[in-house]
Image 1 (cartoon, rainbow, N blue to C red):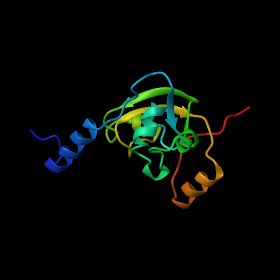
Image 2 (spheres, rainbow, N blue to C red):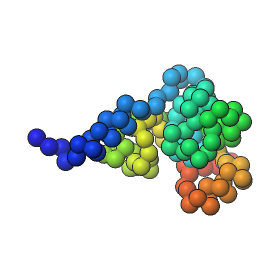
Image 3 (cartoon, rainbow, N blue to C red):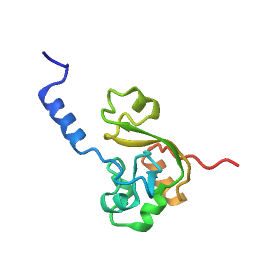
Length: 130
């Protein structure tokens, strides 16, 4: 019985699932301002963001604080982003499996925002409204 995936694609899917990153604690959880992935600040410092390696957060506390936010609402665990309607709704269907914020509030520094614009990257964080 075939599920429509080739052996190579199925192997990649299993590898992605095995490498899914989840928050190790509910305390000090933060969201990546670009993709909305949720992890602890220590995880962002240690690993960076797997979806956004160009933000260069790994081993850079200041950069992690500038590229993540503690202001987010809700969370959704996404195990197979390509098949998940929730991932499509959150617009994370091209990202790795993980836990994502439903909405992210914050704003990038102008330098980082300019870099993302030059790379034609979209981001999920929105400025706080008054």
